[in-house]
Each structure stands twice: as structure tokens, then as C-alpha cells.
Image (cartoon, rainbow, N blue to C red; front, side):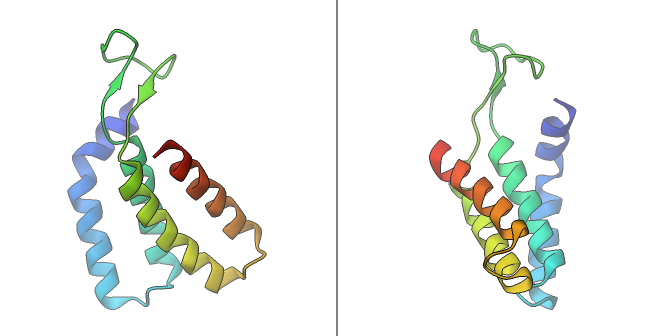
Length: 107
């Protein structure tokens, strides 16, 4: 619960950080890829965190409604960078592609 609340507060700073990194780093830079991965995680968890009765709840039995389309956009950018850095058959890219598939499924 703390990460979700904290992430929502810091989202503008994370977006600004990504924009600044994009200005000075190559699009396939791993640091930029990591920032985009964090943005994907935040957007996937962004939204309403409630139980069945629409009350705020802890992680036990919670439902998270995220912005999966925006999350998938950042995750796909991270996938491109990981593919360049580690190769198309790397476990790093495989893990990221698995996350991307989950985002597409949930979105």
C-alpha cells in the first residue's frame, strides 16, 4: 500500500526524470530503460485500490485498476532497449516481454 500511495505522489517527478534522461541519453540506454520500467510499474498500479465494497484496503484481497495502456507503452520502450543491450534471446528481455504480455492482457 505504501508503494502505491508514494508512487502516485512522485509520478510527476518520475515523468520529469524520464524526459530529462531522454534529452541526454540514447533511447537504448539501460538507465533510461530502468526509468521507463519504473514508470510502467507505477502506471500499472495507478488508480483505485479498493476491496469489493470500494473501501481502501491492504494487499490482502485488493483490486488494482491501473492505466495499462500507458504502462504498456513504457514497458515496450524498455523492451526495445533490453533487446539491443542483451540480445533478442536474453532472459532479461524475456522477463520484460512477459510483463508486457500481462499488461496487454489486463488492458
